[in-house]
Length: 126
Image (cartoon, rainbow, N blue to C red; front, side, top):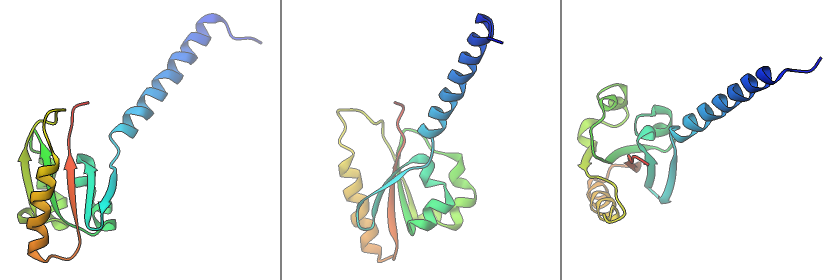
């Protein structure tokens, strides 16, 4: 028995909605990439993912964002204490050089002698 047009439309819309939800979840999944040994670039979701912080041996974080995140006041402090987390309030744009923030904070972190990795998380509205 074949489907009528209305049933096909409903099925297609449902499949489109499922695909849209998958793309949304993937866009907001925690992600990291090692730039050089000890320096890891990630998205904001990676900065409060305890498993990812532990897996990458992250002991310090600098957050480049135009807002602060309440999630950082929770369980993530057991992995990265507040005094090892710096906030830099910026707006990511094509005209702003974010690399200077990475370099400055990486040098400060390296000077502490804390073993482990350093995460730079960047939150953007794109």
